[in-house]
Structure formats: structure tokens, C-alpha cells
Image 1 (tube, rainbow, N blue to C red):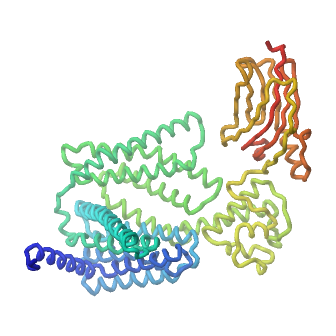
Image 2 (tube, rainbow, N blue to C red):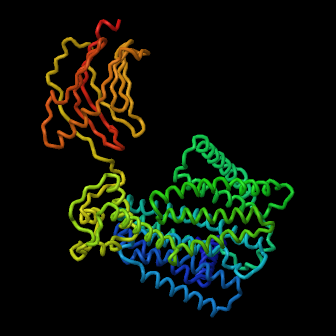
Image 3 (cartoon, rainbow, N blue to C red):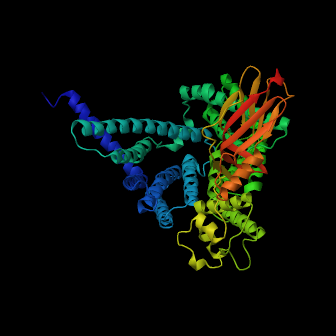
Length: 601
């Protein structure tokens, strides 16, 4: 076979071209690609340690991930501004110094607030990349759109290629494991995913980054697939969610109920999707056949005002009840930004779509640093709420917090536990260490349960309900059923909003249980029925059980009769909680004997 055949030469030339392009991309974005390698190396190590966040590799992973977008943005900024090579290098070195400082200031182990900052920094650098080459450049609105379109499509293509490459290489490793017996470990696949996902996809993405940003303003290309996706998929989904949210708004107005906090997320998600739909079709808005785009934009932004008011009310209720956390802070900031953008697009005649990413980037950055940041405000607010609650309940005195046992209502003890759990997860409990009368005797690794114990309180989880009812007993064995018509074994588990059971004993008689009220009667007739409230007996038996008494068959028996029925009931199991002075059952089991007297015929 001749190795100098035309097909062999073409394959060889393709490999050379690929290598040349890869080298050119590295020379253009060296710091960004090196950051991708650092992130992949950090992830490689984390896979080995089962993602131990105390490892130094975790900091490398976070810092390298930030560096990819940061250095890409700085390079595009330099090209857009026409900076010399030395200036671009100096700016990149300044970015490197910032990343090194970020790595060195990361605590170990990482707290929730560190992840909060990381994701906001990721938002900042990605948003910065969307407008970096156009900083200081007036006009060129079409060029700005074309630039972001190129990044969007290249990013989608990079994700598809990386996914195909990973699947192909993973199958190859599986084949080597199965066919050749090379014993490929399961963690190898995870490591491969990170190397492909970071290094290959970043390299491929940057290879397609626009080189001549100035020339993009003259480009008039618009992918037909983008219009179809936006017009026939994204916008209909936005309209559907608008209908759902307006239906919910009408419902709470009619019922005069306060909105739930969860509604903030679909409103913000809808707003993002709607604004994205507008941006995707923005260049073709002036074409005669696309007059619907202007109508859509006008209708969409005006329709947001009631939903923004709904979101503001929902988050205000949540904050007034539970205070500020990082998540609620972001909802507040997002709502304020959304109101500003809506005003901008409904009040101003001239609009610039660059306002959207630039304003969002600035707000995200301000949410990270300074005393007004989400972390600082949430920590101050929750520490203040905790101090107020402890002082109000006389748990905290001039002496400080002591281990002397205090008796609090369940709800208050749970509220304090929730705040301490939040502080532990997001900020660490060193923030309250000095509140204790003897801080030196506290364990170095202070947990919420220990922190509450050292206050003389009991730690309550957020899912825990009030005083638990939990006991079981046995019915008589053997059980005499003489003179009774029915033996019914009751065994019911109840949902939170459903504490009702109904059973038909025959064509005339039915047995119902609504919460703790047991009723025996004729179907369709209220008179002549026999009703028993089980709550007093259940509470009595639970108290005796907690006191250590052994419950016999006579103890758990309830007997009642009237002219129509005689009923004997043995409670064999009860599980639930007392809340708001009422018994909420989760489960009830009993053996019931029923006699239907002749007078009911």
C-alpha cells in the first residue's frame, strides 16, 4: 500500500491544520487555557478524594474555573480596545494576581458563603465576557448582538462536541476494561469527564471566538433556526407561564391570601426567559414581516409589573418572618433589577440592549463586596435575630450563655435552632462563640446541637414537629367477639393535609374518622350516630407511656353506646404531634368491636 496516496496526504494535512489551529488558540488565550488545565487537575484530584472540600485541590478547582472566563474576557477586552501586546499581558498578569489572592483567601473547609461568592463571581465574569470588547465603544448594537450570538452558538457546539468525545472515550475505556482486562477504575470516568469538560471544551470554544470585533457591526446574518426556536418554542413557553402566574395572582386576590415565597422563583425564571427571547430576535425586529417582535416586547415588559409586585410582596413576607439570608437577598436584588429593566424598556424611547448584561454584572459584583453585600447583610440580620430571641427568652443574660437548662416553647426552641443551623452552614459558629459565659471550654468544632446544648436548650430540626405522640399497646388476645356484629382492624396513615378515613361496614352502616373524631352511623343519616373523640385518650396514654407505665388492654380500651350502636375500641398504636393546641395524627391503629342494635332497622 502506498502511504503517499492523496487520501493519506489529506489526513496528514488535517492533523497539521488541527495542531496549528490549537497552537494559535493557545497563543491567543494562554492564561485562559492554563486555567482550564488547573481546574481539570484540581477536579482530577477531587475525584480521587471523593470531593473532599478540605483538600487544596478544591481551591484550585474553584480558582481555575473562574480563571477561564476571566482571562477570556480580558483578552477580548484588549482586542476590542486595540491594546498592544504588552498592555494585554500586563492586564492578564493583574488578573493572575487577583486569582492567586482569591485562592489564598479561601478558607478550609469552605462554608456556604464561599459557594455563594463563587457562583456570583462566575456570573460576574461570564456577564463581563458578553460586553468586554465593546467597553468604551458607542453604537455597534448589531455588532454586540452578533458577538454574543457567536459565543452562544460556539458554546452550544462545544458542549455537543465535548459530550460526544466523552462518550466515545468512555466507551473505549469500557472496551479496554472488558475486552483487554486493563481494570479501568470507576473514578477514571469522572476524571475523564472533567478533562474533556474543561480543557477540550474551553479550547474548542475559544478557537471559535470572533477575531475582528469591529467588523461584526456590518454582519447581517441571522440563523433561521434561532428564529424558529424563539418564535415557536421559547415565546409560547413564556406565554404559558404568564397565564399560570396571572391565574395564581387572580386566585390570591379573590381568596385574599398572601402569596407563598416559592412564587418568586417562577417569576424570576419567566422574566429571564422572556428577556432572552426578546434578545434572540432583536436584530430582525425592524423587518416588516416581524412586527410581532415589537408587540411581544411591549406586551411582555408591561405584563411584568403585577408579577414584580407579587414577588416583592412574597419576599417581604418571607423576610419579615425569617429575616434575610443570601438566597432571599438575591431575590430582593433580582426583583429590584427586574423593576429597573422593566422601567427602562417601557419608559425610554431609545433603548440599548447592552444595559441588560452590564447592569446585571455590576449588581452581581456589588452583591459580593462591601457591607451591603448579601453575605454581610445576611450575617448581621441573622445574628441580630438570634440575639433578640435569646434575650427575649432570657436564655442570654449579662453573664452570657450558660448550660443551665431552660424550658422554652417548642416553636421558639425550633426558631433558635434554625438560625443556629443557618449560621453554621453559611458562616460558621465562631460568630457566636464569644456569646458564651465560658467560651474557652467549647469544642473547636462547634456544631448546632452542641451550641444549643451549651445554651441549655434542646436542638430541634426544621422538620421536627412539636411534642411527639408515640406509643403502642396490645389488644386482648384472644379477643372475645361475642354479641358483636363486626370486628374492624383500623390501620391508617395520614398525609399532612388529609386526616380523614371512611369505611362502609354494610349497606347501612359506615365508620368515619376525621382527625381524632370517630363516628359510627347510618349512611345518609346524621341522627342516631355514635361519636367518640379519641384525642383525650391518646394524650392520656402518651403521657402514661412517657412516664414509664406499661399499658394493658384495659388501659387502651374505650367503650361507648347509644340506642343504635355499641362500640368497644382498643387503641394499639398512635403516632403524631401536638401543634397549636390540637393533635395532628400521622398514624393510628386500633381494634374496633361494633354491635348494631335492632333499633336501627
